[in-house]
Image 1 (cartoon, each protein chain N blue to C red):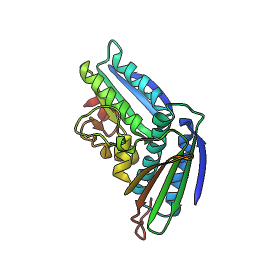
Image 2: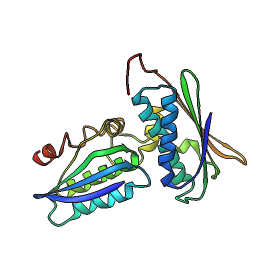
Image 3: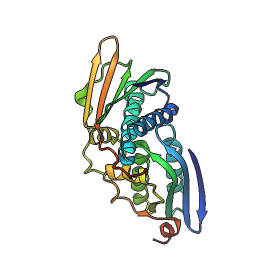
Image 4: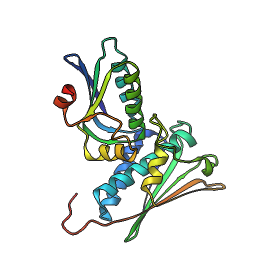
Length: 110
Length: 140
């Protein structure tokens, strides 16, 4: 899996690419938590457009990110979900817990 | 029947998912069922890697897939110490917290889930999913 972090205005966007499973979720976790812990973090958006698979370890990382962001008054949003990752969120009944946006424009505007 | 044996290194999960996906294609289950079955097997393998082998990447996991006209059966076998099946329970989803979702996924997706320990063989997890085949004209 590939992870890239970039700044877009005041927001931090984390681009993930590939499949998120037990072998790769720690890399994702590091990027997500670092972005939220950054001194100036006010909005963190996780880009899942190119993620074709996510397992419970990836979902756990998103939940951890959401909780940390809430504790730091940081806006946490995910966007670009493909069908399979969306179904996993639904199975975990977390699809209503996260702020999910269609694309980056919507994620940074909300 | 298709059978593969991997060592308990998470980097091999992608191979397990690919194999299960191909079996699902062969039996023509729907895309949603395919995604779910792949997830269940991935989570079961991950549980063995994390909880039975405690992250040791050099242990053995065997995965067997068998299909009939209306079901797919997946059997995972490890060589670890006995697992207390009574302790493998899905957690409540009322509380939003990280972790503990793998067993929930397995139990929700698969129609039959059975753990047993065979002396000298290790733990055997047998999972069955009854299929709703694709309708004529339905594409993935």
